[in-house]
Image (cartoon, rainbow, N blue to C red; front, side, top):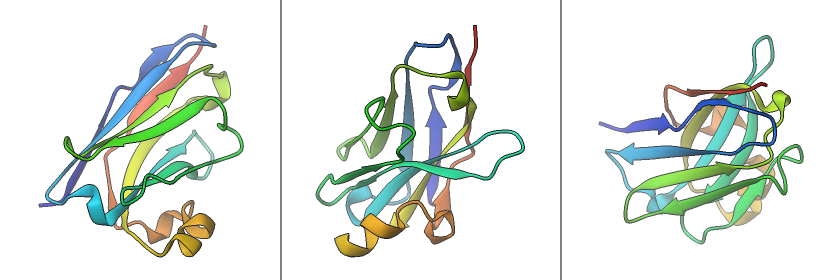
Length: 130
């Protein structure tokens, strides 16, 4: 049974840091791209970051570039999202998702398209507030 489980969310002050984890089971990361998405109240779900588990290529939304870092540990079948310099506008439920790995020239253009992901976790709440 394919499963993605997020953890690491919580309440943090502006400027603080959190590290989210996405543990995969029922499949190996080798043939998948893993994306992080977030959804704030009243807003659409948006792509935050993505990592290709074959070569480690990473992608980021402009709003998080330079602050967030995605990484993977294939041995642990886990993907991480290190979030630094957090802002109140980063407040959202964060989801990880998996999609079968397309060619690189497609992934670079389509990593943020949520409907192309096959498996989703249940989400973890991140609240940035003083």
